Image 1 (cartoon, rainbow, N blue to C red):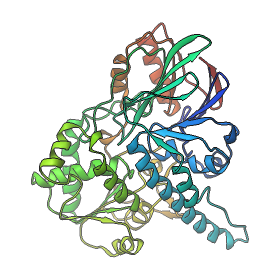
Image 2 (cartoon, rainbow, N blue to C red; image 1 turned 180 degrees about the horizontal axis):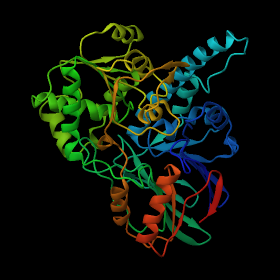
Image 3 (cartoon, rainbow, N blue to C red; image 1 turned 90 degrees about the horizontal axis):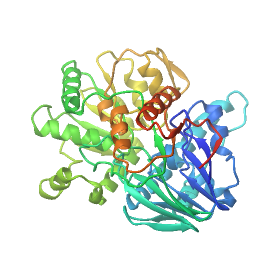
Length: 464
């Protein structure tokens, strides 16, 4: 078996891994690469393989850096099945359409600016129609249900506890008379999540491919996360400022809404207006309510016996652009949650442009920001920052709470590996910036001295 590491190698975006297994080609993940504009355009438009030759695709979860290039893959000739969990299918159906609309709007905006300089327009990567056609190729399978996808290849999804429907991908393979088990961790959740179940342990694993987003870092304790949110929000409201929360539409938005709900119910926050300004976030929250099978026991009981954990009287979900624009004229204190979490696309950039210059306001990051993104620039203290090509001075207070991260930190990743039963022969470390991936590789070498630990480079090919 040969694996081509084609994305999320010593970085965290564009997950893509091509498996060659006794004459078949299986693609694991097909994510959008996000980074410098020219590099992103080149890598997203052009696959380093022929999509027509793929036999199948397996998808671990619905985040855009894992599934966002599937419409382009299908448009370029892939006509096989895309296997995933039921919740992943439902989330991907709305996320891919939203991605297409964002690309269309961004292409139109950039083209308008280029036209002023006599330059030709740019085209979006794919259309909403391409996204819809790709979803028709999805085949959903429940957790813990082994299913054959190719000759000698059986797949089982195990809960990864990262976002709704997220899965570890377990491959049971038979090749040249030998049987072995390959585990792709997907993105690993932290465990003890307010909403989701813990990652499931897996037995008898021979080869492991594991993420390392926070492989060299520790998160703040979850015990203090709600208190930190309450304190930061109260301090800003006392200054009559606004709280702007860049948030991933799937996972972090539902997490922060649930947290604000619990703080309000406990009397720790006033019933200040809260706006979730993202059509995708609104749709994703509705999908969450459709899949209680992914919930942990506490929130499942809250949903069944009390009320909607993602709704309250002072909370408004916004789909329409006209309603979103009205928030520009909002002068009283409020909380605005908007996508994307890295501030690279979507309505959040408009809210940042309108509010980042006011020292009474708070910009609160609750998720990971990859290198070179607008969110990373703000967190690094850069001022001014470019938004829509224009410089904006950063005067608002900036805060980041990594306790809300959906990714396990180095200690939680270590516990995840310790729970895996089997004599691991080879481990590949992916989905982490180089420093994080290399740091976690050293941890793994100490933990598993008999295993060969590799940190693949982009387009490296490894035999298993």
